[in-house]
Length: 549
Image (cartoon, rainbow, N blue to C red; front, side, top):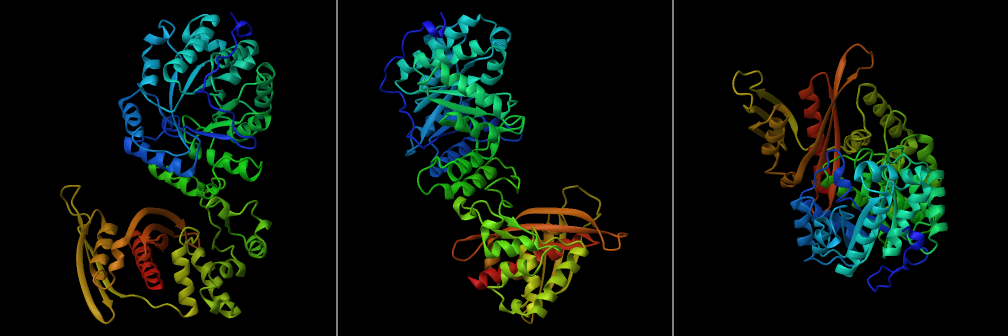
């Protein structure tokens, strides 16, 4: 029997109410679908920590995993039941029953019941190709698997059941009548949401709009959701198209992590929905937490996010061209379509050979009044161009740039003077794991200090030796932590001699508890010398911050 002949929907108090008009439901599947991305491997502690971060952000649903698929997901649901997540529902994910099993005997459905999750989301087959070739059952039998699975879960858990229509858009293009029958079967069995999935990620916006319209025409009372992947690069566009076509429930992952090309990036969807469409996705005031949540997720999955990620990326509000900076300084709307503060992000002024007076003044004039002097400003810009011509790059080395300014405005007060450093152990025969030794001799306020230290390579050894020399008088350096080290070979101004550019990033916990990213750069024909320069600049800038308080 087709869904046209199915009985009316059962009435159950456990069903989710419709979303409030003007709001979208945000269903985050970072912990489940996101963990299928290449290079993503979340521990149980990671999943629990991200659950707290997503609750802090204020998403409506967190999909914790697939109970029964692995021990870690089962442990997650055991642990998450013991903690409160105000305003957020924890969801368990699984599939419809196996064709040979009655619902009460199906191991997958029983695991979902046992999870104790606030909601359950199951997926079923929509595309007749999958029904015949993957499940190898009849089209009618697949409809009965959907109906009976939804009804069983509702009866056993008294919790809301959401239905993910896998490959819905491919199925609708291939056999629209049957695709609509599958979602109708889930709706009439009692599903609270019908989520239309672009599982292969190959749809385009107009196809999304047409398919959503077809579902609304067939099931005018159904509450629809959207779940898309990004294989055609259209995930955000497809999601927003579905929303404007009538979907009120949005599934995706923070930062768009996920299998193949990833899921839709919820950070972009949420920002667009709230700031451009006027649709509330998060509780009042939570949008400002979006950038921090994005960075927490990148850190937990141990990946470096793209700097140009919309809204939340480090470069999302970065300005480099002098004309742009000048205009933004007068009116930020000239080159910013929203304010960075609305998302918890910040405006950044980049310094390079393309910079003009506006860049430097916007960045540091409030700290160094001497920059108002045209002659001083000219010296700064000339030095920037000379340094970049020699191979430096200040875009990711803002600390080095400020130290350059200090030198030009007469505010430079070095912490120490180098007398010499030496590296021992390079090229010595022996175990490949042998440590390298470095000796550093400094003049620190008239006192000569000589220290030696070992490290995993010459740069590590130099960093340890520097610390040994300076920590007695600069204890705050104990809170300076190296987090990134990059080396690139660049061409010199005459194009004939190769130089090495070293970019180093530290995290520094300043006195008082705040954390600052310190980026520094060194350039030389010698990689050790370039590294030494970048290390010293990081130490000098940390000292500036510590004294500044």
